[in-house]
Image 1 (cartoon, rainbow, N blue to C red):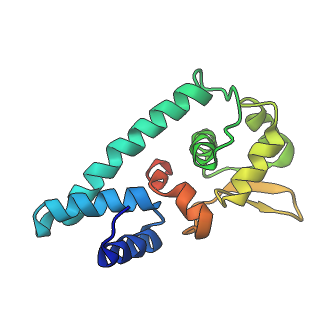
Image 2 (cartoon, rainbow, N blue to C red):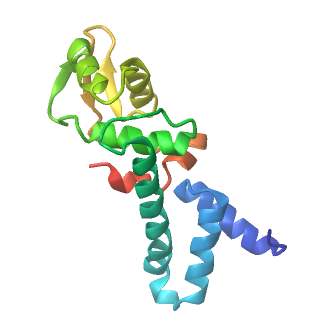
Length: 159
């Protein structure tokens, strides 16, 4: 942990703006600080992107080795990544009734209700409670709080 209060403030500000966790925000700022000033953002992204790519590869290998979910991740960040992979199988221009959506989600894991609830909780999937219709959210909102930390950097995998 750094003792430099000004740097901590910069890290906390970045965390608020980007939704990154402390370590990711600090790593990006350190990398940006070492590089030339005009190239700050691209250098920070080059540090974060490989980390996220490794996390994605490891998570998918562990939880979706054959394209089906073998176990529901207990860590929320891994769950978000799995949900994004499931979401990619849905047609963004299609409106699904609940039975059809359950069938599609059931192809990934028998607990389709959990997948459906989590997709809705993260607002990756929208629903009309009166008609029982579901559709992919074309503009997922900016998440706040713990959801922002769980989603940080994973937005790149959303369509």
